[in-house]
Image (cartoon, helix red, strand yellow):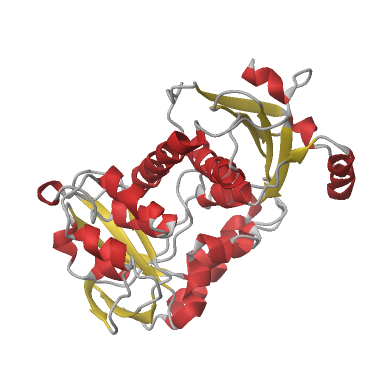
Length: 378
């Protein structure tokens, strides 16, 4: 932070193209000016974050953009609506939202608010804070940007939430949370709605319902859904040859290879900072055993299993995620999932080479020098 004090947002001593603190502060100022002191009225995107500190009693952050209503609110925190926006715009929108904070252990302590934040459509909510909301500026790759926050005194829900029927039924059922997540996904419920329901403690054995920190809940749902998809993909015919795919977003670049063979995964994450490169390697064998638990790997895995299932093929999968210095604020693992979902797998043929010319870089350059992507599967 000392370099920020010296810079004041003017000299860009950190080497970034724009000052992230200035961008965030500008969004904070707009939100605070329009939130009319202790009260905020708007629609939920929906945006709910369950914290980790002090679990099982944790802080739950309920967010909404002041004076933004209806479908427009989705663009403040809905992954499928936000994908494609630049990093600065995503951070600005998240920073504009005001968050009311309540501390609890179970969903039953939060009244009707958990149902608001699993609604299939935005819901108008009026929030009153116990004190004026204050901005907090943190920049790391674990916490998403958040706007001004304050203890929530009360919330008035103006309209009824629209909870997907399969989810509404399972909220009152007594099956395990993982089973419920898989059933909901198989019935076509959006994976992000399932993740919020899981974190807000709305799934699982009713006598053991607890709030689950968002980072844990997101990965748990990816694991459960991914394992279910893997069970289906393992019995499919092999791919006919080596397939490659490439995608990029927010200075994250993804290279994927699928080769004939049993279903297994190798995930290499490479972080670029100055002239230094740090790496994380995760391997999953044919039985589904992982060498490490990593949220980024699980997000990429579920997206690729969806793709293989839709192709009706299986194979051994290698993924390289290259993270550049332009990704200076985390937006969450949704950007991994959504970018990989959009990757097209194709043979390494003339069409692929034309694609490389069009994007202006060879995706194979993301690999460590002297290594082929398929080497990681040997």
